[in-house]
Length: 178
Image 1 (tube, rainbow, N blue to C red):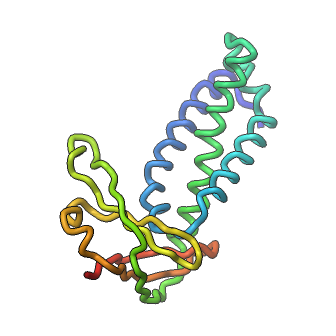
Image 2 (cartoon, helix red, strand yellow):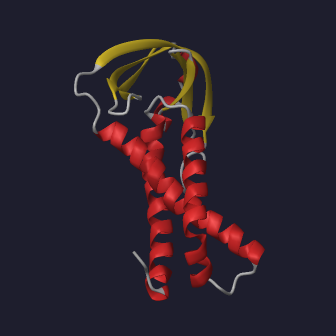
């Protein structure tokens, strides 16, 4: 399937934008999924490299004004944010939205705590983060700002677990217990 220069000049920015939007969407899903970040990162890197090797000639035809170094840099960014993030999103979103419907209730002891800054215009509203040992993996769970002031009084976290379509556990209905 051969694209024209005009089509590629629309295609590349559109896929980059879609990849970035999907990344923003999947952050919350990633936070509620038990999956090793290194696995996702490795997958993104492999997809980025394969896409680069397959499509760099088309990219260079479209953006011929770039020097060799700039061409490699910008094309790698393009493939990272488009193909890499879109494929990573496909994995996490598929696992999440096609999970088993029968949840299992679990309770875990909090092993340590920290916090994150709030969103734009709410930087001072810190979000507490709690860490648990989930099947030998340390998992960070983020809670809303309203739990920040009392974050040191919570000892356990209870939640429901669904097995995702691809085998990665999904955490739902998180609840802090004193």
